[in-house]
Image (tube, rainbow, N blue to C red; front, side):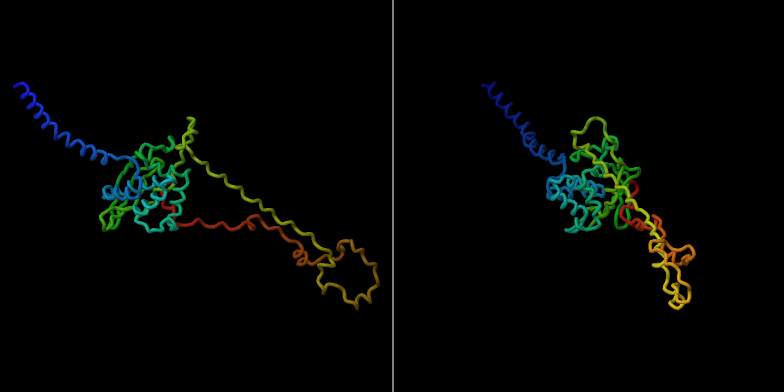
Length: 301
């Protein structure tokens, strides 16, 4: 009897000791799952929720910006990613139609230029084709420069010779937003062509630039032959009717004969009859001066 009571009491004591762990185990597991969640945000709502906990610092805003960029690189997620970029860049509803973002959007939509954005992930290089996983990447920040209205954040790009800059600003809601992203889509060194037989791997697809068409040949105009003297002589140079009656008649030269050697044409008539060929430079259209602004500020191409 005593043995049974002892066993019952022992079981009750052990149950009371283990119960706090059993109660706290489930909440602890759920908390770790949320805190250690990896991968890109799946929806705009998910992205916005993350911004409220991450974009509380300048570096956090840049991290959320690249999350939105990597989502936009996937055509299947582009609709939601457009909202993400609009939010983190504090842009208007029609931001994709703004001329300011033409180059940015063109490089986001061109798969052969996606390596520009991948170059900001730690561990990438031109030699490995800037290979990285958008669901698990790190950014390397070197320094930041605080100004009165904005902050410049400097981060590494494995394809650039110097650090790239991102301008961020803290708005009245307390969160940081990207206000100038020009350095993030400036060109970097081209990825090296891999000789390891990676033709089956889409991460190594690099489209070669289209060959430029050779300039069109411009031929000089052909000089025209001078016409016979009858057609180029001015009216006053022809003899008057009274002189013809006084001078002895001479046999008329055949119509097919060229101009007589005894009657040289005036210099101004000959020059007007012969068209001087123009130089090739004169026939080419003027070259337009390079446009100012745009990516001229970018340190590396």
